[in-house]
Length: 261
Image (cartoon, rainbow, N blue to C red; front, side, top):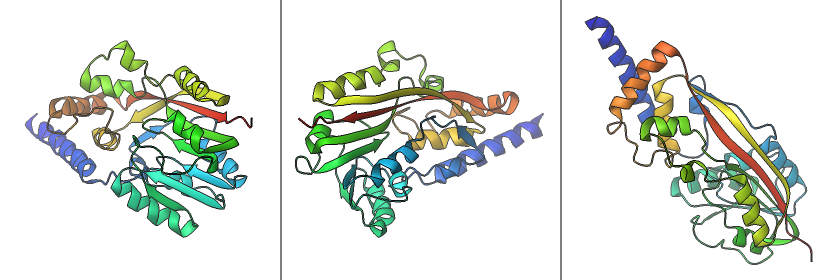
């Protein structure tokens, strides 16, 4: 009995130690390979974005993260600019995008976009922390397009509520795509596409949960391994006896156009 317990403890320490040492820069999720999976939305955001970029003359990617998604497009617009607010991601995005001829501008999410009116015919954003609809409309040219994949309501809340307990309905219902549509239309955009999906996630070891919460810091804002050690150890035992910890992410795609008139 004692030897088995020590074995489990060592496995726990190893898994958590690897997760704590892993870099959280950018939006490269390759560390999760073999440890966690997430079903992909049916619309294929990167493919859709690449198609729009191939037909744009001036494009802006807002809150680009480490620039990985934008850099995946085979063809960029002749003028392509990205913004990012977190300094480590600014450096990562610059290294990826400058060789492609794209400019990266450091800009905080809460500040106005540092560009003139009607500067772009395409604005994209994948998983923005927040969307400034008025600023989006301002920098779009008449007839221009906004394309964004966003986190939907109660995304991965099985993870959130495992650590924080049941959340109030107003928290669970935040990021509703219907609210996004209303905000876009109030700002003057015409919503041409709105799709939502709920997608299966599997965490196959406790380290993948630790890395997830270190990377997506707003899920459990006060998360540290030390603070939640008891819950983490319990989760480690649960995964060992029952299999992967299952959660469900929530995503929606919104595409909108700025009227020409």
